[in-house]
Image 1 (cartoon, rainbow, N blue to C red):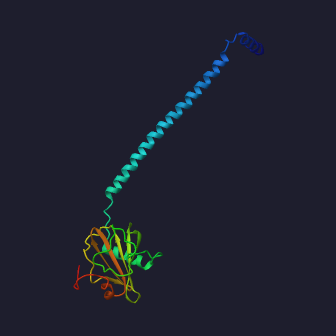
Image 2: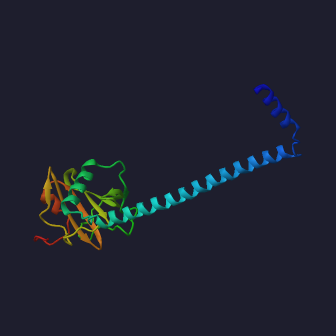
Length: 208
């Protein structure tokens, strides 16, 4: 009985005529639906990516602004300047530089007016001194002594306008720093305070 019913249903289904082109229309419809779904998914994903990227950029900008606003002003102390100059002086240098008498130094970093013009003075470029570029003047001295004058554009709060006749001394080095013409000058001398003062063109009385 059940087998007969199945046979009748199958026969009826085969007898129903299939509209011409139905298979092609169904196939095209499936392809179009799949394409629309793919494009829609890409559009939604792209919109979310753009929105997320914009929010991330805004958040990063706000974080930078807050950090810059809360960051304390950077101040360089006189002692920090002296320590850096002595460290650089002790490291020495690879290139002897240019003789000042043969090639003038760049005008933006001139030799100080209060340092004696000594025959044989050389100059060379300075990189990364307190994060700045500048010049170093290497000055010869008596009995093999030497000195170096560092010149950079750096503000140091409370710095005097002339080198002191009583310099900071450590490990056979004398050092002093001063501001002149909007530039920072740091003199480091190999030797004692007497040799140090021999490099300066100053009155023989204590200065700053």
